[in-house]
Image (cartoon, rainbow, N blue to C red; front, side, top):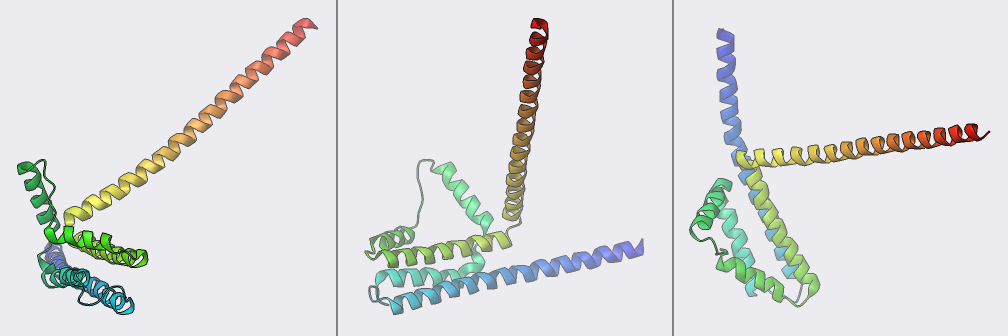
Length: 194
């Protein structure tokens, strides 16, 4: 009994330290991903003559990245969910977007060079994926939902394939049975005529 209690205490201690260290790792990984996006934005701006370092689009995107790097530890999936639920409960017909987000999206759309616009959109997508990955790494709720959804999709696809296979086999058996009955009927009629 003593070994069991000692083992439980050690496992609880390791789990606590692991979760604490994991959260630090997730924040470091988020910041590393965002630094990479910021570096790519810098090199894109440096190599492209159609946008400069004092262009409002560059300044806005860099500010968004810098603020997220600095205050990323405050990001929380449950905080975002609760905020959105409270908004929907109190303001049902409103869609809330930040002024910066709207201006930033409009600036990207207003870029005339298609290749530059696609590159900026790809950087914005990498930024959003980094945030989602951080939520996935730090939110047990989102992780459970993600895993549950993954298994739900896999099981539903397997059941569709199994149902299709069963239906195909049943259909083939029914066709074979009908064909055998038709052949037997034809043979019976041929014997009756002979």
